[in-house]
Image (cartoon, rainbow, N blue to C red; front, side, top):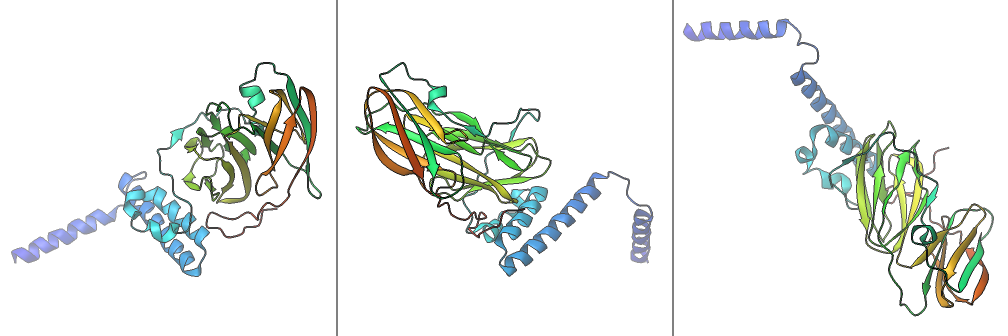
Length: 309
């Protein structure tokens, strides 16, 4: 009899508890709804994984991870990220949302660390094989191999209006670049380049992650959420580097006469082309040609992707 009475009271209490809906903005209900949303995303992610759509599966998994936290789904992460570049999980930084836009290109030893007047200079024009144009990067280093290294920089490549800016940047080896998001949507910056493969994960407006580039090479940047976004970071050890203007023109104002190893690259090139130039006292001129052999853009799993119209 006592058990029946207790059960009756319990049932009455449960009925009373469910008689009235929870108050709006109830933190428990909000958290429960978030967990239900994350569970739904995980199920969709698993379905996409089964279909072989790695990119969309990982996007859905990352969205669920944002809701419940990385620890809650850590055991599942390898299932969705195998084949992608190494994940960068350093703490996110807060960026000023009113920061001014970045220019289209950044990086010139002529401006950052001007050389004292010397006896030689080198100017020229970069042409691209076939039709079309593009921003190019020219570097010079003495053929002797003896030169002073440039100071690593702290730079920014932003995500704004669903584009990267600068689109082309040159930095010395050892430089650190911040990748802030100034859009009202999430972005996912990544690189599959041999010199620096990485995946910064997805993060929202006003947030940024940094990455330090300790190896020379051309870094092709993409956003795994937006196929139209691309940019190039050229990491150099050479003491002299410039970016061409819109017509392909460039100039090194102050050089010691002698033989130099010159590398030329265009944003439509796969890798730089190397040649030797002899800088004589006075003004020197040169015409350069870059290859238009850049590979097809891919998502972070290496699958070809078409640019959005």
